View 1 (tube, protein in one colour):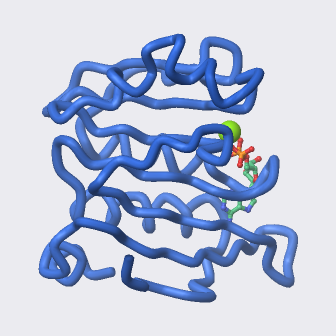
View 2 (tube, helix red, strand yellow; view 1 turned 30 degrees about the vertical axis):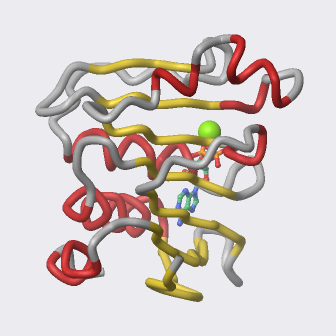
Length: 154
Ligand SMILES: Nc1ncnc2c1ncn2[C@@H]1O[C@H](COP(=O)(O)OP(=O)(O)O)[C@@H](O)[C@H]1O
Ligand SMILES: [Mg+2]
């Protein structure tokens, strides 16, 4: 695990979306993005921005009830929201570990609900900033080549 950014200030949805576009440039098939943070921190805003950069078009409904929404794009994008999992077993029982496959990009909200750790991933932890529309991000990576991060401008 290595650090990428700490206390990165993201102003408004536009700031969060700009981060999403950069992250997308550092990511490829088989990678996962784990989005940590309380309700309302902007995990879904960030998830959608990453997916859009991968070419996902059309509506992107929240996976809060379905747990997983899949999209066909340049590479398949899988948007997980694990909030409603009952326990750590349910993730495996539902075959969600197999859904995080090497051909897809996996974007995961509430990753704390599983102990499954993809080998290549970026973790983003979002917290509140001083102003109502400000968020702070701490970003770390595991198994992603550092040059991908640098090339993406992160
Ligand atoms: N800097 C910011 N980044 C992301 N969202 C923000 C920001 N400032 C305000 N918001 C608002 O916070 C809310 C985030 O919602 P959402 O992405 O659904 O959060 P989460 O998925 O973490 O529960 C949206 O209403 C969005 O407009
Ligand atoms: Mg959400």
